[in-house]
Amino acid sequence: MKRLVLVISSILCLTNCLTAQKGKTFIVNAGLRVEECIPFNERFRFPEFTAGKVTFKNGTISQAKLNYNYVVSEMQFLQGKDTLSIANEKDILGIIIAGDIFIVNKGYLELIFDDKVQVGIKQYFNLMDVRKKDPYGEIGSGAATDSYSSLHSNGQYNKLTVNQNRIFQMVSEYYLAASSREFVPFTKKKVMQLFPKNKTDIEDYLNSNKVDFDSRIDLVRFAEYLSKL
Image 1 (cartoon, helix red, strand yellow):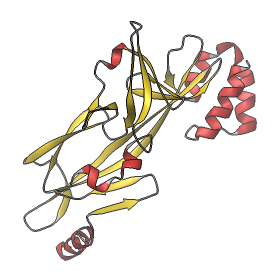
Image 2 (image 1 turned 90 degrees about the vertical axis):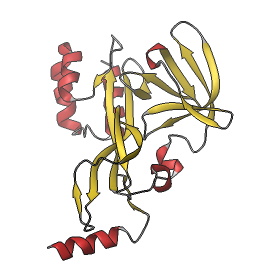
Image 3 (image 1 turned 45 degrees about the vertical axis):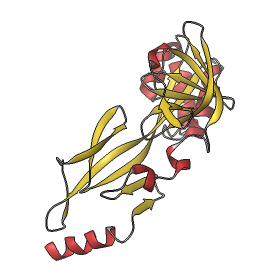
């Protein structure tokens, strides 16, 4: 059994970074930075930092080159040669980058449908597992102690160590807002709560259309229907 684990460990170490496209899962091998294993166009929403506008609740407007970082779940901007994250998210009314709108709702939501109802998507890389190598080269899940940096992922600070392999996976969550403009998870239960007078019609729609609540296309189409109620 130990020999098998050692063989698997050796295969993992043949390359610095391994990527499985299905589910956008990335393995960051021990001793390497996330930036070395997850390409820029996978870590960020836009292919480059792009001119954008931040509107604050007090009416202040700030313009900068912006990009949303999926790994740290933060909106970032360029200041000289530095990449910084926008502070005081609770004070932000909205952000527009290349015509795309972001709002703050327990993290950043990108609007993908905006009508009588709104649909937002929240995307981030989740640290799925940490695999620590023991002195014999075996790999197992667990926490480690010798940290050299930290990574802010999905609202949590996760310590990184030189003897850990880290597995990240892209997560997409969908949210819906109706008349109150308060976003809630886009689920059948929440839809029924938001539209109590239209339950029968909504049930008929769902029976006819078989909505996949993990499908962006299905949810936008469903939102178009809800906006006409």
